[in-house]
Length: 181
Image 1 (cartoon, one colour):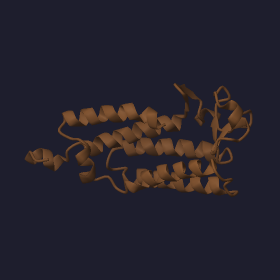
Image 2 (tube, one colour; image 1 turned 45 degrees about the vertical axis):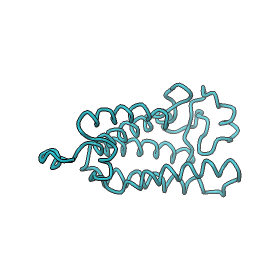
Image 3 (cartoon, rainbow, N blue to C red; image 1 turned 30 degrees about the vertical axis):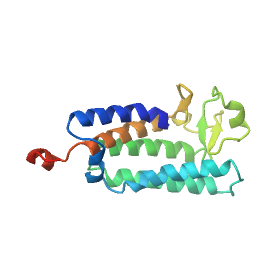
Image 4 (spheres, rainbow, N blue to C red; image 1 turned 30 degrees about the horizontal axis):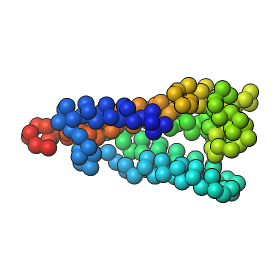
């Protein structure tokens, strides 16, 4: 998902620079609780990494997913007035949470995935091969992309995050009015 977000993020940086903004504006933006999506990302990465070395206890995945998506949804809620990107990202998080929660806390992945064998054997933490019993299958990782699959929720999360990032990099309105940055 990071690779998928890299190009739009770079584009929004270039567009923000054309409007007098940039990365330096992020610290001065009015976005609330920026640590929450960072925590969500780090939590998922930590559990993914740990699962390669040790068998995680029963219920660890459910706890990780609950905390991760609670953080993302809280971030979206707290920033709902800052920029429409918060609503878009929140919708993406809700889509992903719904499909994951309804499928044993695993993201269902298209059966045409190159990793189908590993998924069927349960070797990829937090993911499962889609089958006839999959609930809300259309919200799973079924959209083919170079190198894998993405979900509707992933695309909404990326679109919302990029939109928020763009808004955070723009000069604040009062700075524009006074000509200061």
